[in-house]
Image (cartoon, rainbow, N blue to C red; front, side):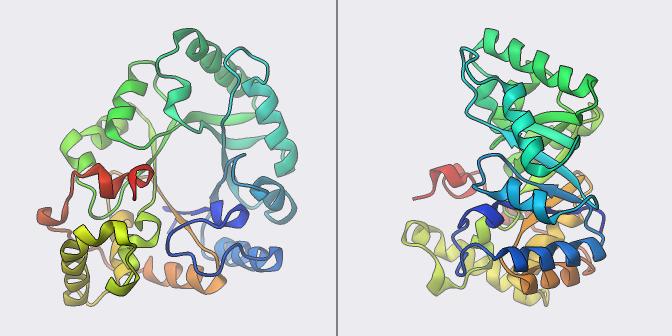
Length: 286
């Protein structure tokens, strides 16, 4: 269960196409965090751009969790530098140091050599000072990871991967990251909840995938698993992933995830693996 980690974007924003209840109250968040702690979850993922999330965690998370945060909107000419943004995150998180700091997008590194050099220098300086243990980047695709690896070797890479995502298997990059000693943090294992929706709940843009999603539902039923349980188990039993980030809006959702984390692994047939960015990359939805 140490592989399961808690993503916290829902604590600060109304996030996800399957989100029907909005942001949880701080009382509910406290219950979620207490249950996560008791359930063996030891890492929280957040970001400066997740609304009030860092502040809420600073008031509720205590010292029981490792925290990874992300910084974005870095001024290319240094008006607001990475160090200032990170120190602001530390103050909101009520921490003197944290486990991980990621650049929120790889575009902050790619295509601007001068800016890239400044950012990497600053990241390494924060690490050398002991303000953060590990540094890295959040990405969306194998192509972006290849571009990042040409620039530096991060300690952590966070990336989307779900039970139907064939891009990573085709690329071979999960194994390459392991060889390089990179910690692999998987997010969007439910595709923002899409893999758990009934057919009548699918948004209009994905109607062209309705047959495929119907087959996914049938496969899960055949394996005596609910949709989200199957998606979670596929990630948790993937030996090429070090952490699996899941997000919740309600305590009952976390309780389900903790229960499912004890389920056996599930073998996803290759015919379910898609290479289509239009369904795998949430930036291209709709």
